[in-house]
Image (cartoon, rainbow, N blue to C red; front, side):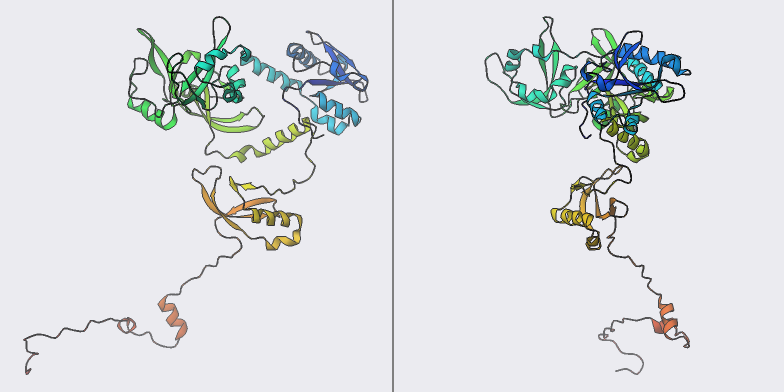
Length: 478
């Protein structure tokens, strides 16, 4: 079961019938009405393509979970004791192995947790429907010198209203049918009144202009320093977006084009929880005033926990996440459990027991020399070769929490099953050598002798006296 499950693949549901005193039979859900009433059938005798699709029937699924929770104290009333959700391809594989109970347990779901996820999605508002990219005005693109093949990698994100996540080359016409110039920039889509889409270029500039008026306002020195250092003004600034009317806005510098971008404060959806991590009232005040705050234990799209500093990014119409300086091992146990569960859901569970050691081709961001890599691989396979393995000195290693690359000795630790960095060569033992003092040396060498006066111990370097010229040497002298 090593086939990966696609994110948008159809998911199906199994339920276990509730029976007093014994384990009930497994049934596959074939239909479900809006009230949450389910019809079931034997999964081994049913066409899997006709099973109820969990992904596309959330209202019915929510009603089903609520109904289950209301009568959960008495499973016999609902007729269901357990609920399982998995991809259709996973169910097909499980049927081939007689719905192995141990593997099946990996797909058991908690209705309370599922309802919580649904409520979270509802609180985030309705999903944004993507724009139809087939309606892009190709003639307008030709005038602007933008090629579809250059835009293709970013098209999906652009259909949801985002700019391209990178620069593309453009050759716009200076005038209709005239000379073209070569430049670069980001692009986005804009819907027109007739339903067509136009590609909007956002041209690159060498430097952000912070000294000219921006929507009728000169930026103060604090805002300029913040934009140069972090890309964001760090506070809300009133801009004259309409003549005679000031609007509070966030201001950021586009990280790709250096263009100064504004976003009215009213356009930001203010929440007390971001990615399942709560924000205190103080943090909410700082964040929505344009500052940077710490977000602890938020949940990534993949389900892992992380920490980050976040700040409103007007250029991206979102929050910027800064992970520099954080210890990713803080949630290591939780994230390993999430990874193990995801592998199980994909039908490719992790093997029991300790994880076997793996020699990567790159460590800490730097490639291992081929000869060293081959030696380490050989020692991994043949334990008798391990005493011959020596540490190697590597430069420019990147460690979590370190701002600058580091130089270290690197060597595999076969007992611990990992590759370790060292400040000193681990193949040599450092010995501390104490230099004895002159008095200790003298005492140990001549224990019975009386110490000589200091002036005799001292080595004296005398400069010969210069002979006197035209002067007597004293009384009686010539």
